[in-house]
Image 1 (spheres, rainbow, N blue to C red):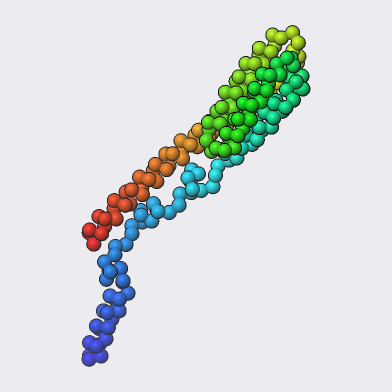
Image 2 (image 1 turned 180 degrees about the vertical axis):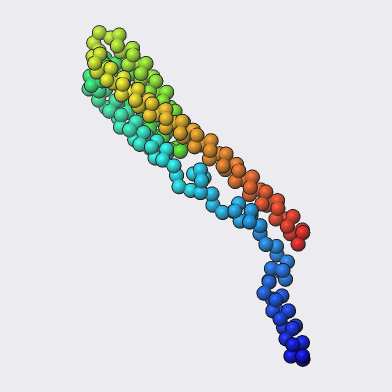
Length: 196
């Protein structure tokens, strides 16, 4: 009986020592706090980037290449697309616009402003091609092929711009949710300390 009495306090001390959080008075963090402080892997906030910025970079490089061609060899390009070569100055202006749009996309590939600018430029190009049909020196067959190519590029630019706009809205919404969750965790920590 004496040995059992001597051993019982030692067991109690062992139990108290095995729980250092109760002795120090530091409360455990809730599961919600641990989830809020972890990395967010969805929506492109801190996870892997989506494919739309990479596709926009391709459009930017394409625009720069096309702009250089319009700027350096406008007369040859005019004959290729069926436009009278007298409009070479207008083609050079369009080349400067393409280069500017391409550089904007390369600098800010995740934003939709540069791609939307390409959509507006494509519409202007289609209007100019439509006006070129009234010229006597124009080549109607080449104009039709060029207009079809520009219409296809306009559709591609429009889809990319819409996807980038949707991604930007999604990222902004999820970033707001993360900020709200982190602020809620910071408000819960003083309350947990007061309860302890």
